[in-house]
Image 1: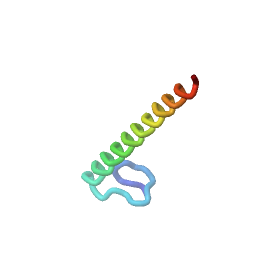
Image 2: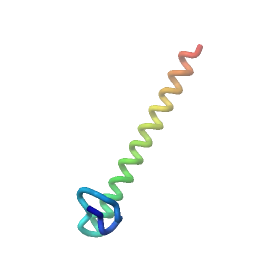
Image 3: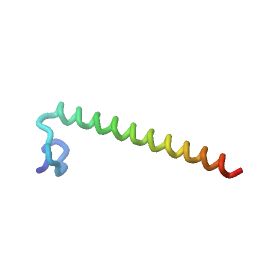
Image 4: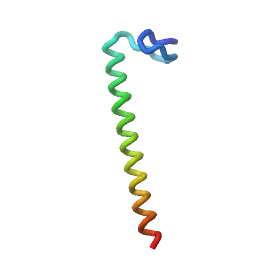
Length: 54
């Protein structure tokens, strides 16, 4: 089913503009947190590599 707001093929389309904005904000938050977590893991891995290189 296509969402009338974002025109993407989705299982559960938004019913109004406000719902679209809420979902978009939630998606941005999840992506930002995932990116921060991923960057944190990368910096931890680098620290571990530099310690074991000696």
